[in-house]
Length: 448
Image (cartoon, rainbow, N blue to C red):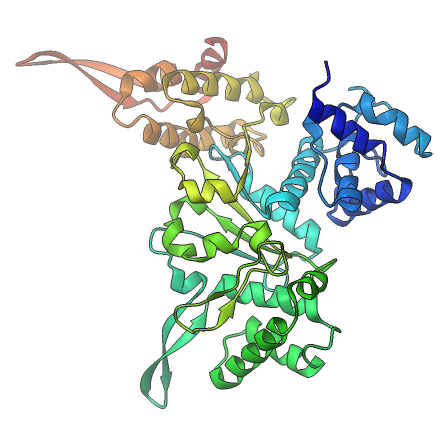
């Protein structure tokens, strides 16, 4: 039975024309997603993205199936090919689906967090998406990469006082942080050839934003001129400035390790899509150190990564959770299929480990597939097992040797010792080599 919302969405689908579909295909090409076999595209995502052009927003894919849209696409003249599992030989299909999902959520929220256990490829996926979207392999122009930690501050992220030595004297200047500089670069890219600043002024300001400047007076005057020009426009004119503007990205690795409220400060509100420059509920604030006006441009996107073994998503600041979309990146044992080392199926080994970890701990502490992904020999497996997997499990189950023994089996050695208080057990990691090592792993796989 179709709900009212589903009927409304399907009605909108039937209003899409050929140019809307072409727009969606172009968007998918722009972010470097070679879906399926070459120039073939998943109908649900094409239709969803086509909604941007026709209705100003993407259509929710959960409200329709391919069967709901295929007749209309055929009517518009598009060829539809049904792919079954045998036909669909796309390399890295899961990666491509993640990238389409990233694009869809960024279009709605402007910032997302990839979360999951260690070793699932969250950082790799974020970097791959941004490199494909910007066609740039290194940061410094249209994207930047930072890692949050406990001492990371607002002063590093937005702006703050920094010491400088001039003629042997220490002075303090207000220096812009990485987020503020990237936001200004995104604004400059949007106003090029719009007559707000001269080409020389834009070039000069861009040079300051990409390098530490010693001429703070000139830098501040150029920023003041930029904001005066922006604020002289109406909100509608500012909105027009950012239409089809090149996109910029900030990747924040380990975002949950920082104090989010302290780092973002008042900018946590400005991140919301409708409060960005030129948007419906646009907010422009005065920054506390420089007293400069500031707003977040709509062509700047944030992708954060979060290791759930460090901190559960349930413990994330409620203000952050409301402003970010979240994508879970889970372990994918299927990426290890076909990788067998002396009878050890690595995919089954990972599945067995994770089932036990989830039962004894929780799903946030599972092990990612990347730990095993480049293993081709017994020696490599031995190194990863003893230097990465076992230390990780010891951290998860600190001083809980019974749980470790139930997971690792023969790799945990138990010795009974008599004490004045009775018999006690001492546990140690048992170092196995050769056939003993392989047989112990086989027993872990078999003991599900």
